[in-house]
Length: 341
Ligand SMILES: [Zn+2]
Ligand SMILES: [Zn+2]
Image 1 (cartoon, protein in one colour):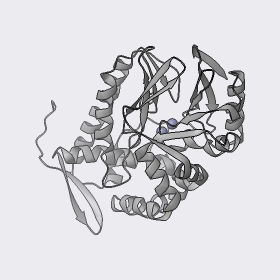
Image 2 (cartoon, helix red, strand yellow; image 1 turned 120 degrees about the horizontal axis):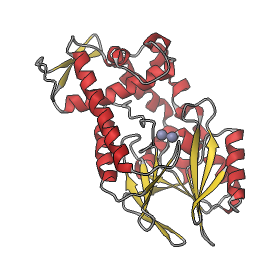
Image 3 (tube, rainbow, N blue to C red; image 1 turned 90 degrees about the vertical axis):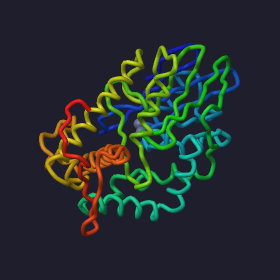
Image 4 (spheres, rainbow, N blue to C red; image 1 turned 90 degrees about the horizontal axis):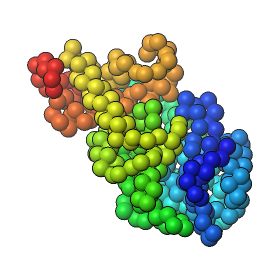
C-alpha cells in the first residue's frame, strides 16, 4: 500500500508478520534523478513483494533506486537490503557510522559478539534458556546476509550531514537510545521528522542494554531532548501511523521512563535482586498475565529494558551492585522512602 504524503514523498507499508508492530513504514523520496528509500523491511517474500509493489505504484522500479538510507540496524529495517542491492547494483546504502561498524562486527565476529552478550546476560541472572539461546533472539543470527552487505558496502553517516533530493534537504540527526547509531531525518521546509523507531505514536520504543559498556536509556532521554528542541509539524515513524504533536509524545515517553525508574527503585527497596529477578517483578504492558506466561523472547526484551533502567540509576548513585557467585545483585544506596524524587 502506498500513499503520497507530500509531493514526491511516499509511504509504503511493508508487513511484519507475527510481530506486534504490525508493519514497517518505508519512505520513498523521488526527484527526476534521485530515488531515495528510507528503511526496507524483513527479508521475507511477502515483505519484498509489498515493497516492490509499493515502489512501482509510486512510479519507481526497484532497480531505479539510487540511495537507501537506514534509520538503524534492526532487522525489520535492514532485512531486505540484500534483495535491494541485488536488483540495483549501484545503489548507495547509508547508515550511521556506529552501526556500520557494528554491522562489520556482526558479519565478521558474530561468535565474539554473541559470547559478550551471553556473558553479560548470565551475570545478570538470565537462565541458560535465554542466555544460551541468542540464535533465536538476536537478528545477527537469523539475518546474517543483511549485515554482510552492510559490512561490505555501507557508507557511514554522521550527525549534521545533509542529503538533498529534488527540493528537499534532509538533515541527519543522531538519536542514540533505541539503538546506538539510530538516526532521524529532518526536513526543515516541511518541518517533517522521519523518526525511525525513536518516536512512535503509541508504542514505547524498546530501549535495552545488552552490553556492559552501554548506557542506552541515558542516551535515549538525551535524544528525546534533542528532537524535542526541533520545530516539527509532522512525524513519519517507522511503525504505526503518521502523527503530529511530537512534543506531547516526547513528554509521555519521558514520563513513562520516570515511572519505570521509580518502580525499579521501589522493588529494590525490599532487598537486593538480580536484574532478571527484578524484570519478573516490573509491570509490563503486555497481554500475558504473569511472568511465567511470557515467551522467552519477551523475557529477554524485559531483561534488557530493566538493565537499561538499572544503569541510569547506578550512574546517578541511586543503586549499587555487589557480586556473589558470578551473579550481579542490585540494591538501593539509601533506604529512605521519598515519594517526591
Ligand atoms: Zn528498531
Ligand atoms: Zn523497527
